[in-house]
Image 1 (cartoon, rainbow, N blue to C red):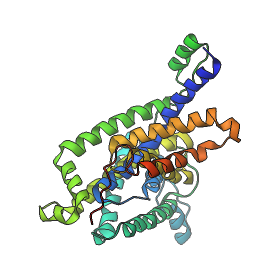
Image 2: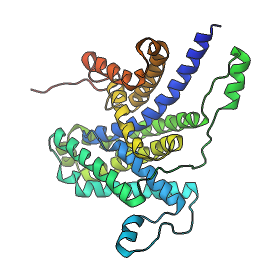
Image 3: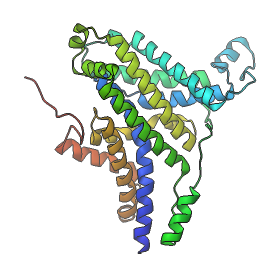
Image 4: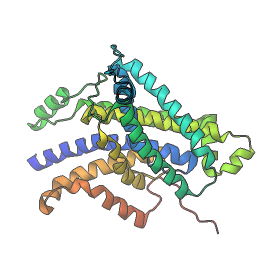
Amino acid sequence: MPDQLIFGMEVVLNGLMAGVLYALVALGFVLIYKASGIFNYAQGVMALFAAMTLVGMMEGRVPFSHLINAVFGTEIHHFGWHLPGLAAILLTMVIMVALAWVVNQLIFRHLVNQEPIILFMATIGLAYFLEGFGDMMWGSDIKKLDVGLPQGINLMIDETTLNIFGYGFFIDNLDLVATGVAALLVIALVIFAQYSKQGRAMRAVADDHQAALSVGISLNFIWVMVWSLAGFVALVAGIMWGTKSGVQFSLSLIALKALPVLMLGGFTSIPGAIVGGLIIGVGEKLFEFTVGPLVGGATENWFAYVLALIFLVFRPQGLFGEKIIERV
């Protein structure tokens, strides 16, 4: 088998793994957009904040220690204990639910039936506030996140491909775990949205706020629930990306790569977020592998956005999105 074909197969596999990580971020966008029509610009920062909080809990850091030390002249940074990974994850989930409640109470319950651009601007403000609040709470240093997930090359895949092709594929164990987690998340979210009472209420709120209110659906409850789910998805994405590259400011920028994923899969489709992520992941890796050397490389930075632009021209609702109908 030609070497280029073998290398291409490895590129495709790594692209699939990268696409799953993109899709994890896109899932949070889809959840909030389905229930409220809000494009949540703060989703990437929510992943960063969740990862920072998780690290702080695990390491026993004192929240706002820099502020406390500056005001009182102390040198307090740690409580002196460490939390196990599972306990820290559960506590972080509680904090993300509390954050969802606060966001709804202070911001979005006052913006019912406002124009989409107003809601979008509110999420931009929320993103910058959360970013600064997280730095003030836990510090702006780069943090290492380790919750016990396997990392490094998968030896079984490496040995199997070496025996078959004479070349071992490098597939990261963390990417395999992320793939499994993403699959479970999608299955759970689809079942929840389609078959649960709360899921049907969520879809009703997305269609028409006033109509949902008229049949007794609590808008506040649905929005808190959806933002809590998005916070949980952000935590999962933060764990995967934080473990892979450290908890740092660049983690918040993964939201930008989720945009073309949403444009391909559709803003209202949970399976579409996964399919869009896989298409973007494989597409950008293959394009870099095949066309990159001919154009000077660095095509991964812009390929996804060009592909999304093409979709916007010919199919603006995405592959799985609902057809756009203008009422006049």
